[in-house]
Each structure stands twice: as C-alpha cells, then as structure tokens.
Length: 199
Image 1 (cartoon, rainbow, N blue to C red):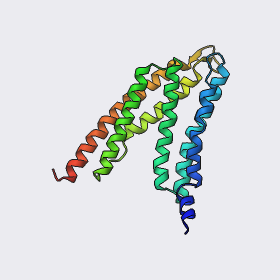
Image 2 (image 1 turned 120 degrees about the vertical axis):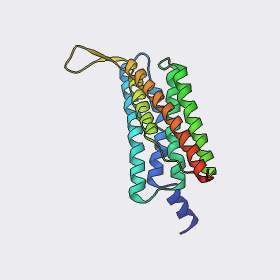
Image 3 (image 1 turned 90 degrees about the vertical axis):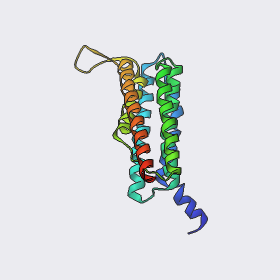
Image 4 (image 1 turned 30 degrees about the horizontal axis):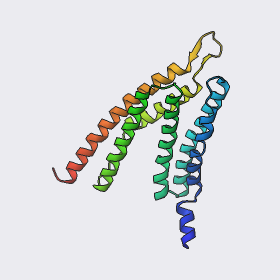
C-alpha cells in the first residue's frame, strides 16, 4: 500500500468525510437563526437535526466498513464539540440562552477532555458512562427546541407549545446530567488509577 493509499484510507474515507461535512453545516444553521422569521428558525433546526443524524451515520459506517481510524477517533468528537459550542455561544449572543448555562456545559466538556488526556497518558481506560450519553441527548434536544424558539400550536388542540421554555428546561436537565457524569468520570479515573498503582 502506497503512502497516498494509506492516507486515503486513514483520512479521506467516507465516514471521515461525513464527519467533516457536519462541521460545514454549522454556518447555514447560524445564518438561518432569525429573530423575526419563525420559519427560518425551523429550517435551522432541521439542518441541525441532519447534522446530528449524520453523527450516527458516520460512526455506523466506520464500524460496518472497518474504517475506524485514529484520525476518525480524533475528528468525530471534535466535530461534535465544535458544532455544539458554536451553536450555544451564538444562542447566548442571540439572547436565547443564559450565559451561565453555556459556561457550565463548556467548562464541564473542557474538564472531561483534560481528564481523558490525563487518563490516556497514564494508560488508564475509563468506560463512558450513561450520564455522559444522557447529557448529550438532552443537550441536542434542548438545542433543537431553542433553535425553533417560537410558540407553536400543537396539532389537534388550541394549546401552544413554547419551544423556548421547553428548550431551556431540557438544557437544564443536560446540565444536571453533565455534572453527575463529570463526578462519575472523576471517581472512575481515581479508582482506575489506584488499581493501576496497586493501591
């Protein structure tokens, strides 16, 4: 296998291209967020949902095709964090999310990333817990609601669903899940490090 073929397999494969493509979906989402046009906000949410679904597709395709690579393991979570961080920061600037919520979520992510790096350098493997997965689900759902933002009448009723309020509540649940998972990850790291040292 030539150097180009190795590079193509490691970097320029279909799952990685889908992952990189998700990053390029961020600008359209940001441009469609509009304070005066509810329909544009719905389109923004739909594109964000597409990017979230593609996250599942690229992982499934990589495993199915045997293309789980070092580059893919690096760029996939990076794309997730860029996408979520960019949207949360923009939503703060747009006045849809309190800044303190975003500070907590991003600080937790930086902390966990640092702990993972420390664990990797120490040769410690810590399995991902259910709390982190729950945080991700609630966070993505919350962002979807916050992108829609406006109240809409529910089908078959005269009641309205306030997407903004539901989004804030869902994002609040994701904060609780993120803090719980951070504590669990820290305890798991300490326990694994102790076992490695025979303590």
